[in-house]
Amino acid sequence: MENLDAGIIYNKEVGPGYFLLGLDWRPLAFKPGQFVMLRVSDGLDPLLRRPFGIYRVMSGGNGVELLYQVVGKGTRILSLKRPGERLGVLGPLGNGFTMPPKGARVVMVAGGMGIVPLYPFAHEVRGAVLLYGTRDAAQASVAGDFKELGCPVRHATEDGSLGVKGYVTELLKEELTRDAVVYACGPAPMLKAVAAMAAGSGTQCYVSLERSMACGIGVCLGCAVKGGAHADAENKLYKMVCSDGPVFESKEIDWEAF
Image (cartoon, rainbow, N blue to C red):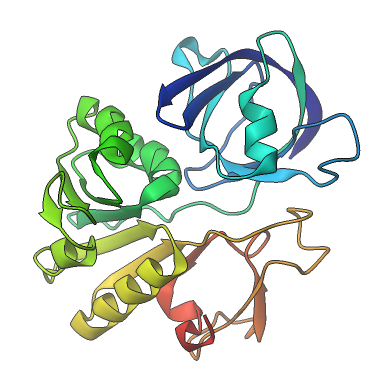
C-alpha cells in the first residue's frame, strides 16, 4: 500500500457522465478487484477520500486508469480536474478476485459501474462471458473494452434499448451450468439475487461489494456488513468491505441483512 500524490495524465469523458482518469502512479502490483482511495480536493469539502476501483494498467505500464461515473459532489469535482493537477492516492487496498479452477467456465455479472473491477479480471482470465445490466444502451457503451479482449458480452437493459429487456439476472439463468464459476459486481439488490441463484444451483460465486467508505483500511467501521452462516475461520460477525473485502465468496455474506 502506498500513500502519495499522483499526477493526472488525462481525465476524459468516454460516455455520458463516464470518465477515464489516467494517473502517473505505478503500483508495484495490484490484484483485479482491488481499489484506491482518492482525495479529490485540497480543501475540507469534501473532507473524506472516495473509493475507486482500479480499471487497468496503462499501455507500457506508465500509469493506471480509473473508470468512474459522475454521481455526486466528489465525482463531479473529480470530473473537472485537468492534466497536470495532482491527486492524493492511497492504495492498492482490499483483496482481489480468486482465480477460477482450471477448466471452469467463468461467468461475470455486472450492473452499471460494476464492470470496473471485472475488466482487469477478464484481462487475466480471458474467455469469460460478461453479462452486463444497465438502464439503457447509452450506459452500456462502456463495455466496448471487454469486446476488444475477445470477451463475449450479453446485455440486459431496463428500457429494452439493447439486448434483453429487464434485469441481468434473466441472462444468468441461462449460464448457471455445473462447471460455471460466477464473479459479480454491482448494486446490492443485484448481488443478492445473483448469490441466491448461485446458491440454488450449487454454483460457486464471488461478489465484489460496493459500499460507501471513509477510511479504506478497516478503521472507521463505516462499511461493515453482516457475515453469513458460512463465514471464514475467523467467524467474524461483521466484515469490513474495505479490508476483509471488497471481494467475498457469496456464502460469507448474510444477504438477508441487506
